[in-house]
Image (cartoon, rainbow, N blue to C red):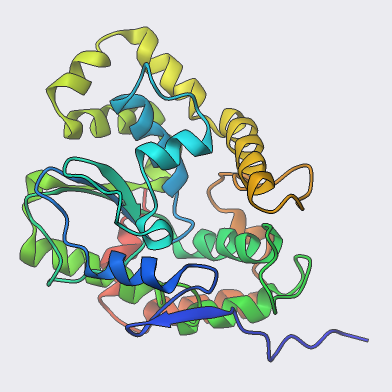
Length: 299
């Protein structure tokens, strides 16, 4: 008997028309939505599963080289996730992460923004594994990685956390052009990071300013950061410390939590059937403005 997943949904908390994980406290989500960045803030902004943790780790090492110990707990302290934890503890000049769609009413062109982007096909795969396999288990979602066809349908409809991928990216691209200052916004492309991590590390360092540029004049610093943020190192450091974090919260987790999974480019070819490929092709072609987004991944 073939399992029927046609009625499966991704359980969500709906706030201001945006879907969030339903485990997020509503008051934290609402505070993040209302928050206007301070002039001195540094914000890591991504659609989910686009390389967020990778960039957070790079930033933590660049800005806190002697302090950062490579654990998730320390990363969360240095770069908190405001959608989940709220904004009560934010102070001017802090670094933080968000997945929120663009909002001109809270956008501050004086703050610095790093926007990380990744090919939607690979995002969908990573997102699927995150929802399906990462504990604590999402209520109402089938166990095991065997319902990707249904998830892909939800993804192209925007019926997943943070909504439609293309709409989210169009919002930030158009918003950055209309309201932002080029010197305060850095777009980081996941595929370019994979192709030439050293080059992208230096780009990020140059964006952060003179003190960080001075730091990476030491070749050993560059090599150390590249090694510690390589997928093989992060799979060990992040997965183990994430497991410890969950263990502190629930006490009921598997021995290994794959928060960092493969970190590859093009993994979607291992999952996409001709039917799913056609669905994504039609989704991408549905709006001519999407071409600008897809051109970013031609590396």
